[in-house]
Image (cartoon, rainbow, N blue to C red):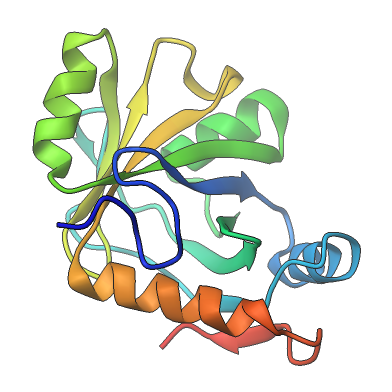
Length: 181
């Protein structure tokens, strides 16, 4: 596996910054207009089967969007329900804003075990459309400081996010909201 992703971020390093938002369309407009980030690719109703939140089955439903600011993948997450989740934890504590940093991992399970040896605990686990499972880790501060998300680097993940980054490189600001697929 390469030392970096197709969009330039390092393996085993920060590859994504994520925020919880109350209105996905408004958040995309903010990022596109004020931060020159985008375009954003929307994945509606990501109600992944087999979600595990703090050891229990979870049914959290979110709509999310991903776009780039330079080489940084920005993820905007709009929770769509009040089911127990890492998203609800954040909203209950401090409403909206920063949620997590995503770490690119060749082996999510091995990386999770390594972080757990350093005192982290798995807070959430779910399958993702680009293959594998993501794992959110909590260092004991929970949503106060934000979570770490271990991102499974699969060929589909790297290809998809690199395609999003390539679209951002010469983006003229038009059509800021696009389908994920």
